[in-house]
Image 1 (cartoon, one colour):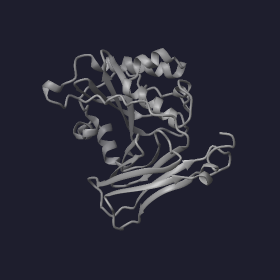
Image 2 (spheres, rainbow, N blue to C red; image 1 turned 90 degrees about the vertical axis):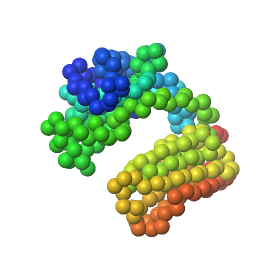
Image 3 (cartoon, helix red, strand yellow; image 1 turned 180 degrees about the vertical axis):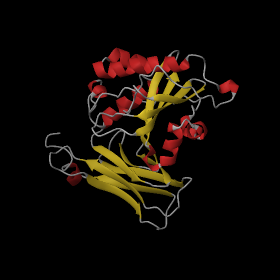
Image 4 (tube, rainbow, N blue to C red; image 1 turned 60 degrees about the vertical axis):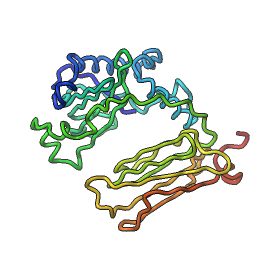
Length: 297
């Protein structure tokens, strides 16, 4: 839930055609929306959070909390640190298309986890449902792109102007249906340098990973008996096609001291042959279930 903003002095970079140029004052509107959202998170103000958060994002958060067996609405505000402000950052790009908007900010982004922040990019997304509502934020770490970091610091904004991920899509994501609460907590883990991986676990849980090493909770969790998994893999620009790959599903125990159980794995060593599409299954049998839940649950 990396979601941020508190900027009043900003630069709007007009890179789209005149018909797609951001409406006058949209930057200030997005700042106001984010500021209200951030205050709601800090103050645990549910009515304001609901008013300032996109409908599809609210539904996704509710489903994720159910998958993690955490309470709603209390779990919404259960963060390790409050969302950081954007004081001292500069808005370097603003894109609007239809009922969607994205704003990119550059500077020393402080997540409140210690250490000296470095100059990176935050991309904030919004949707309009009568008024602008906050959707999500994406953190772009420029550690691997030192030349880009130097260009932006010098005022050369070509990178954000030409990279598709910084542009508003024009499509408001649909609001997903409510997903049943998990019986067993599960997570899908993917390591995919140079590739995009899409994974579906059972009926509800769909995931996309791009050039990533991360895990996401399985919506709906794992169920007793058989569980299904499908995956697709495709190369990304800049990849060599020889990178290692790993796709795994872990079952997360609620018994203190019990390690996660690896229920599924597809792995390719560096330089190995890759299968771009696959299906698999994993099972939660009584012996496995006994390792996941305390007795009586």
